Picture 1 (spheres, rainbow, N blue to C red):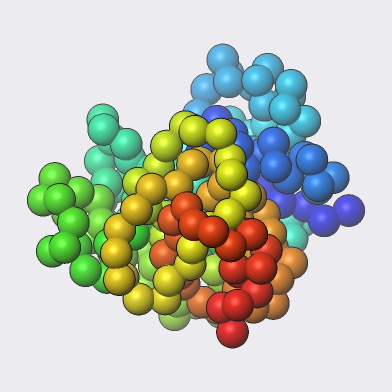
Picture 2: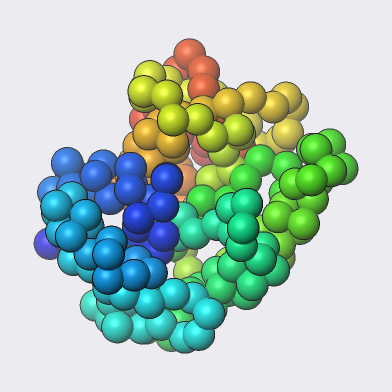
Length: 210
């Protein structure tokens, strides 16, 4: 069975990714930060691993076919430590352990942070540093750069952009669906794209990338 390791599995986006993977019958492993989150992850059908990316973490990565990284500093975390260094540790460890596929949930605006609200700049710069490491790695990768994230219900339709033409919003559920679809769509391999709500069914939009 295809095994996917989700970093940030209990996060606001990560939990949608775990559930979307489970619906597709993937073998799901999730990195969580505390014992109190264990039961929720088991309820969602994933095997929990307690830890964080402040140091090298490998237990749940061993034997995984793919990694989806949905970690984020949020309002209270340190973007340099989490969005940059923590993500880089995960990228490097995934490469060392022979993981074949790596999907990074990043953010719209990492290439042009000056076009985004000033308060977001530290987060965007940190995420961009991690993106560069992934782009230069040997991993088959996909970088998903969603617009503003909402907790709305999924609509199953998106707009993808290689270039930052305009901003927009997208539900976390739709981002999760795109990340899971990307695992098996060759068109998404070794590419990066912006993702917002749109009018095109998600699979069709992703297949148009190449």
